[in-house]
Image (cartoon, rainbow, N blue to C red; front, side):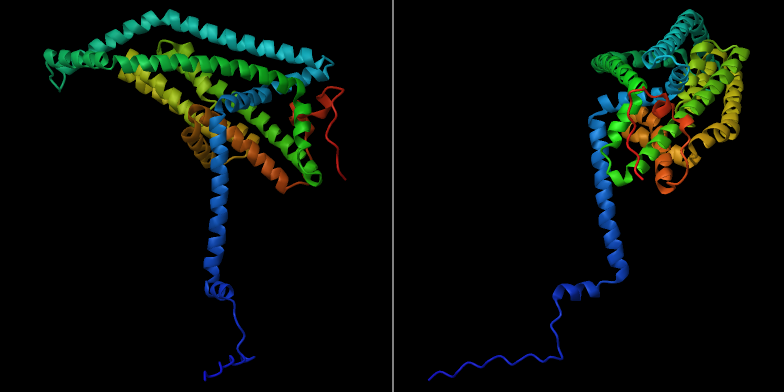
Length: 396
């Protein structure tokens, strides 16, 4: 006969069962739990940013013209607003400002090309004389090189070019393709710019309607303040660029460096990339002075560039850009470096305006009770919008 199975002993009420999960969680130190929670949230944010950057890079052909058109709209919007307030029809005002802008840029480029073409023979002559001086210094100077060594170096350089002719040809074809992309981007930029100037209020109102109703007013105000910051940034940057170009151009003209107008224009364009752009273009001016006029003239040009940079850093940047965008210089440098790594020259050009807009928008969302100055947002100013425009509804 088999023995009857024993029934399990009843559990003592004094020893409750603790779930394993609860027991493990309570055993993890509180600081480690907080660190883990912050870590996975940080990873999610980084992954989201990576996806955004990837999508923007994939659509760079559209994003870059759109961004440049927004910058140009910030530059031209005040003029359109003034003409509209003077009772000029908005379409006619946009046409006047666009034609004036295209005529100015076209005339400037034509003048620069003419100056460069007329000064090219003298530049070639000066470069040839400088190369002869360098050759004599290599032979008669402390290095005491022989004529055959210099000639061998030149022959090796020519042979290297011949051996890499296919690579150079491929690069030229790539450059031709890049020129085609640039022309396409310019046409798209002009097309977008026309709609930004003529219907900026309608576009912004349409975008704001996608925001939840309870925060729509705050987002609307933050966006308008962000665009006001962009307008101030473009105005201040243009003023700084003019001072840099004129100052360095006058210095180059005084010391007798050739191609003054093209070099001054290059400095003007480079100054739209804060801090870094003017330094790089100023270095180009110093290099041209070194090759054409010698070491002493290059030192004088370097002193002129440094003086203009000091004027920009200690007077113009704090007075104009500091009030316009309220960004620390370190934030500007880091933004330019990040934009340069992510998207090259276009990223360096657009990083600081993007940071300025985000800074103004976030400040507005945090300090939501500050009044909005409508006169600083011409393209989104409801007073200058088309009479048939309907602003987004205000919530009480």
